Image 1: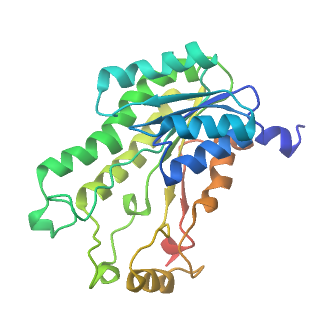
Image 2: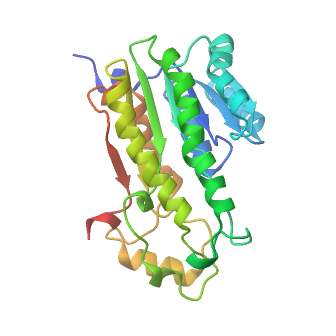
Length: 265
């Protein structure tokens, strides 16, 4: 029987993280590198800084890929590019997400004002790009004995919003975000049964992460959360390490809610 340390090791393996230059993406990249994996960092911009930092801090091979996920042809070529440069592909973390902003037209507005255009943009990044990249990556992930896809969804792919949290703030909870994340969770279940036993597919659904939200929102959110705080990025390292590694070798098709107990009420 292997030790827990051996089960958690990603030494000799290669991971790809989309949205790797963002808050969550950077932590996911660091987690894989800390476990010993070579890491391909994909984002619209900024991937080089993260890749260079990983190489310097953890001594792992890295690859920086600046790419718009809406570029289907370029996206489809990414897995082969990684294999050519880093020698394989064992872990795919679909982390990139279209979250919009309060200033985006048709996004953080009342339901009647939300637009089809922003709906389509969210679906393109949060769901369609995951489909395309996963489809291109599976043949390479299946070559070894450790293929793992980890998709990052949201509690709002499972639950409806509590609108009282947003009173008096510029924040919101667009329908397209929830629908795309719900679709991602179901796609993951479908894919898990389709690519088994050669590749495992699981989902992480984060709760709210503290990133300077209005104080009123933060207080309401924490009061409604059993652990009485919002998440920080470090809270996701353990579940990423688990799902990416052989520690979860008999786990597939699952959605792990990392939400401080939010969904337990």
